Image (spheres, rainbow, N blue to C red):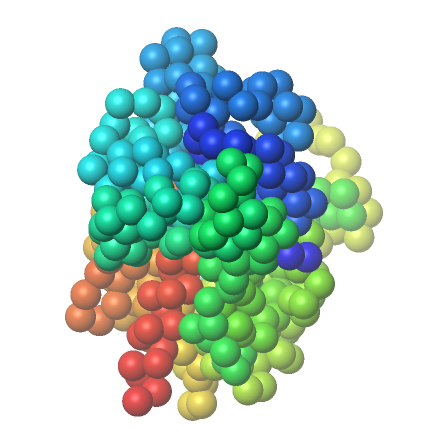
Length: 401
Ligand code: PMT
């Protein structure tokens, strides 16, 4: 599986002859498993029809800031939040100037201002325009703002000139984008993640469980992998598949998860417990399917072991990160779990909203540790996981010092 698997890439196409190469770029990104949304400027539409991008990306192309139909489907702010990365290819001299100036007078420029996603541009223009002081000054401004510059490369140009200004080929751009997603903050580090729900059997056909989809835990495992860690994932029942490089253990119940975690703890440096483990299980599992009876019935529940607390209590404990799913008093309850379970960090997750948390593509959390906290606003779980891993890696390294 590629580093781009399930990544949300917003491709901005501006008005240059190299726009035809962006069609190949969309194909290559899709081949790598990325989700691609295309935004075209008015000038870009003079070179390529939006329908071509629609066919290749599988999504309606976004053309205008003031299109009520488009806004009703996926509004520009939603699109800005959706993106894990914005790539502008080709980026003309004009679009670079507008970015450097912070203009917001069309959809693409507005998205660049509204999104917190990293921005990469693949400049393409006549060699004299590229060499012009104005363009070079704009380039410097963009570099200072951490915009990733992909190219341009030297060669023969559409206008007959020879020199710097050709847009990078699609394959090269994809390779660079892959590198952006694979920073090596956890190189040589072993990470164990739990994900998904547990199922606590009542009888052979029934169980107690919860709404965890596994999305957050799998995203955390993937982000740790992309940061260079070797990753093991103990997962409750869910429909997701993991990257081939992640060692995956599928389990059912909390007791299974406890066993799988402790069997795989040797040499683990960081333990991240994202799983929504059932706190209770039926005291007795009926051997046969329980038959309906007149009137009500009750099931005696007993406490499940606390997997995270059991790991954090070990003498040679790894760096322990818990998630705390809360519906009220978020920080207060999460901080209590940090202390009671003796954790290094806790990710406080508000789970009373339908558009984030359990079984959603999105999440918003507050990470809490002994002497501080950091809020992460609502974003995709994939992007959040990358940010969380970067934060966890920083604290882990500090503790090791
Ligand atoms: O799977 P998704 O649909 O993507 O949803 C993600 C999520 C909402 C499940 C996730 O972000 C989350 O908040 N996970 C923690 C859920 C939870 O069980 O929270 P808790 O407050 O009950 O538990 C606190 C911590 O102790 C958690 O790290 C949990 O894994 C751990 N725990 C809890 C009980 C138990 N018996 N053993 C444990 O290890």
